[in-house]
Image (cartoon, rainbow over all chains, first blue to last red):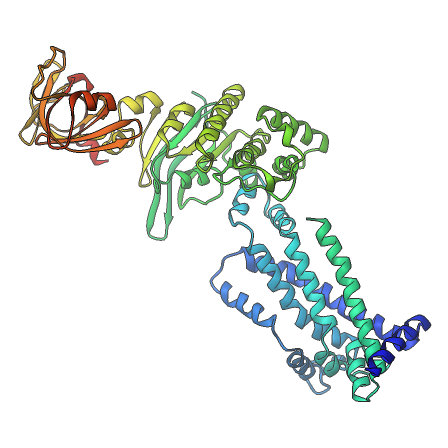
Length: 230
Length: 363
């Protein structure tokens, strides 16, 4: 119990003092996971829209692949990315292993299926006749898609929230491809693992509170936008 | 007559099934052409092809004088109203502006048009309401305004009122008819309801199983159906096959089984025909009753086999060697003491019969 109280007290000390290491870790977490979320959306919007709206023979197969990807364990992603980026691996010459870029790559693989999968279901929830109606009112294909995105805006925002949530909280992949290098690739989750393994619970709790606080603030912002657009 | 839309040799297949086969159909400028027929007749398919929403397997649909239009240019010359209003999660006013926004009209012009059409369709008072709180009738008015405000050359409507309740439907139909005649808007209107077709249509095209059976002014179709299917759909319940046995001066005697029926007509002896007779054109007398002298040439002794209530009337089915159906009022049923098993005379005029040559029945 004392650990918890100490942790909370320490967390506020660290925050108020503006501990440079904590700030750096926090900013890196936000940068890496934010960038991964944005890339996932840039890929997920067109791919998810295509899979939701266009009929082709292997469509169900690809949607199943995406849906399976939504439950992909981060450690498995970490393993795969490690194999590719390892110095002797196929992409070893890029020297990306144990860099923030490697973490972004791994997190994109985790959050892309979440974003795409939820975008597919958001668009497929709409009445399919709505597309015909919009075309029947003179919409171009692009205008029709924009109307559908707007009409599905609530679940589309849920896709952004879930995609960000899937990566800000993940530890396995960041640890494996980032290496938890101090001042370089240490993010909130990997720092918490380290502090816990060292038995420094107070520090781990402090970082956890910051992590939860960030997740809350980001989601609060997104949710506010989402609900205002109802 | 000024042709607006030309449909030629149109065929639409779904897999191996031909769901539409239309050698020729013209839509005239400023007319309301009703596509009438039962479910599966191909009406909606034809409408969607006319809207540029489905590609024909073969043949063409084009606006007169416009042979080369891109898909988008074509679609922007028409607007559509479907059975379900399919409104967006937005206000009434913004919903009506949807199609105009696709066309990039200025804000000022958009809202001028939107306001004018809301006025014409009596929905100005709900302009700021969210679409999701509207009643079915209001939502369909919004859908109509959304299509009309585009002021396209052709409006296509697919059973727009079949999902609203009967009183609302009558109101909507009356208002729509008013707007159509006020604006001389060309319109293709799909329905399976004869009354709607009679109310709104200038011309009616009757379709069955992907084929066009007859097209013409509403009254012509109603009074002179060309095929047994059209006759049956227009409420002719007695369609009896027979052969012309005797022909003299505009009156022919037709034999069906052992029954002889006389009809106005001019067909050679031996022709196969269908005798078409509306149930409301048959008068019933009890067998014991003295039949008043009348000009009715046909008097068949029948036995009543069933009596079923149909709205305010009673549908009486009879057997006289041929099966006949008559519609009678409740007071008549009581007065005559009609009941299943009783013998009655079915009396009808030779001029009440419409004869269909059997070969056109093989369409």
